[in-house]
Length: 266
Length: 332
Image (cartoon, rainbow over all chains, first blue to last red; front, side, top):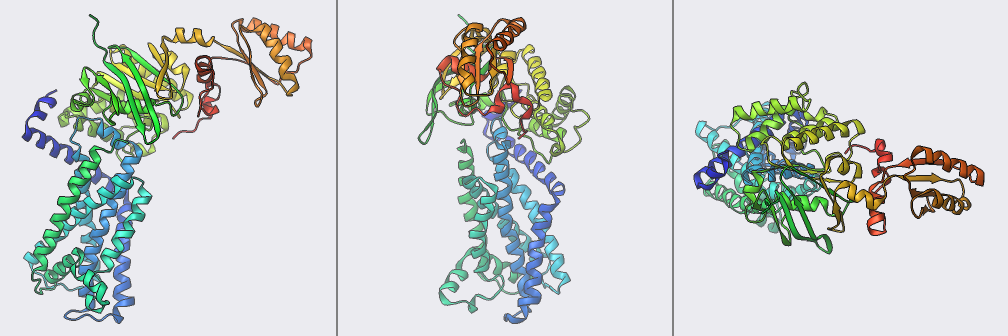
């Protein structure tokens, strides 16, 4: 076999790493139709939030500059994608606990491919869920005013968010390992991050100390960006800062996860 | 000069916190042979396999597989090994064929070749008809066969089988044994860990008995058996009072000192007189008026090996690990 020779050249190594990642992306994509309950649960939760906030709380929440349903949907999209990080973590920790990852690690394949394959597949899965949520939103009165460019920018923002947060989920899985624990851990960091934000209410209604956090944390910046794009409102510096935050998260967590994965021999 | 062994470990040490998993382990397997590593749970067998497969780094010591250092040349080692672990490491939500194709692609086979190899292995492992079904629906035996097939996709010259039949029913176990024997005849070098003396006996050219992270005895199966004493005659008696009488009778009938298991109400002794001798023992028990609850002639178990070698029973060995109770095992 020519594998060892190809591995010596840097570009050959990179090409193999991409091939390996794509083989594993395909594997995870095959799971989507075969474990339909995963997609169903990933969709039911945001649908419940839409119904809850649109019809139960919505009437009591005042927002400026938009109808509440128009305000709400940007928050729902971002929260849905953010929660997707937990799916990445649960999937990875399941592979770790079944011994499948041991098999991968005993093969002459790129170590990063196991993580990259999964995060890429989760990107596709997240896109599908968001697409469903757009349709659900339209069904309950969401009327975006975005043009093609704004939609493309929205998609780009959500994809970047999905990909970078998937790596946080992967990192947590590599430290915690047990799928149930990954799920519990997920609620601890995902709830404050998505609720102490501009997802469901304007931050101006929060007490000062909380507002200080909510106004500056990345999820709020991302929501404001997506909301601005969808409702054709100015987004100011929030857009670039939001994108940079995601890039920073990716730059920290991707190498961290890969390093942890390389040494995960216990 | 003799050829270097395909698998060689010298003085491997591995600690997990305060636990010493490997305490100076030495192993060697010549090309085309099967090395059986026999030991109870927690003896360090799996840790040794993980180090040799580059999944884990030893704290100290040296190991080579196919002539490559597992620490400094892991990629070269990985390109030459196959691993079948204790738990069938297959993707439940892929079909048998997809599983093998995936491993083939990750082993750097071109797509078409990976596909051909998958079909070939499915046929060879009697999974041809099941190849299009999700592995989730496979029986325990089918999963293990798929797992073994997965470790053979790249036709590696060295194979690590970590307790390949633990948790299998007897029939599936025999099938696995046949498959492994076939691989050996094809020239593959195999390291096989097992808790079953019978399995090591059947498949291994050399057996290394491991306890507390080191090799306490090694040799061919017959060399080890000589030290254990072959078959044992075991007699269960109804009352504690009968134990002494039974021990006295068996001391005369057997080949050496009988072993008294007070809690179990049993006495056993190495026994070579066969079934005819058995009838004689029954007559003697009758004449002495000692009742017998149960009487059996059994092959030596891992426990017997340990008793003979260390004077203590194999710790952590649950009763279902003895060949007599194999049928009751649950699959994992």
